[in-house]
Length: 325
Length: 141
Image (cartoon, rainbow over all chains, first blue to last red; front, side, top):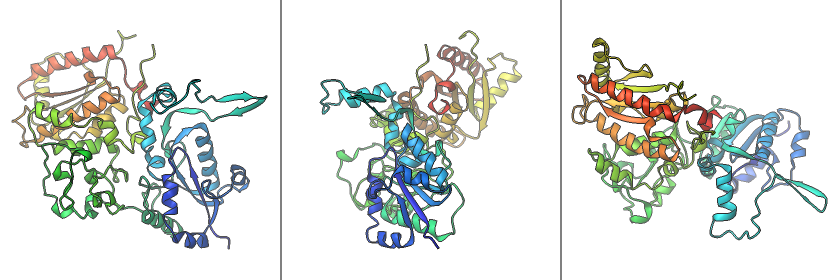
């Protein structure tokens, strides 16, 4: 019998998910014994046309990382959907848009202008910006088109499973892959490889967390050297653990960094950013408007903080468009 | 066009104070704008910011969250939680480009039917010039 075929593809991502896949280290040998990898642009020389030649539904599972930012991403995820039995949104960007989806707070003109002209490190004296097509020496070169907003892949194609994380850890990846290959797959739409409980459940500092956490000040990580033996929330650090899915074994907290929420929402949460904001706001230990406002103003960028990985999948999707005049 | 625009406003009213005020406004035959869709909840502390953004996505042009006056909460401190949550949510909605007038938090006690009517009128007048929200949301485009 042929080995099951696996495809891995990247869309709008940073390459971190690819690194994470490599982090499964020597287990990669077990993996290639079990499956045939038919597409993996970062490591193997298969092309789009190789995928096009495969019969529909012949790939057992495609793991796609990165969100859909340009027309080419849209084309590739649709192609992989057609050729695959199972589509896995691998990593935060693919599942909810991830950090790149914070670009949904800006229009295309705003972010290209920022990236190609305004950033202090940009040296672009001729003011070059990406063009859809350009003719050089009689040859037409084409670039994919930038879409109006960054979308998680499930807004473009049907997605079967989600693997959370920015990036998913090696253990989470391995657990997800073995779940897929076990044949005992969970219901469609499930998150695989991670926990069903919030991060606090597996956090080593959980036992130091009081029943009722209250804070009178919110501190940013650079403002304080945290006590590594005490729940970070009680020290005023904005730890997203209570609102975030576990599965990473609290790696950041073990390094005294508060959780930033990369494992995303728990089941039944419809909007991670609103939920996380709800929980942080409710532990502010003041009752008058002025003091509450002061604590909340300590957050310079609440949308970037609470929607850091999930703006693309948020209820509102990003910044609203201006009224058309 | 804007003359004809009638905003839809979701009103989350707490069971103990604001909902009773709405009842009183009705039984006293006070006139107030018909733009409100009332959702009764046990306490303003029950209003998760998720509900507010969902209301906006589903077509609300404004959201009014209303509960007992501070210190009068039936559950002692639910309205303080509402105050903290809506303060933070409003800051987030600023970044998302949603005008401040569209989310309002008010304390309306059971006897303050007239106050509700005044707030209702004010809110409708403030939202009218802003126009409909739903078509401008990225998720609806």
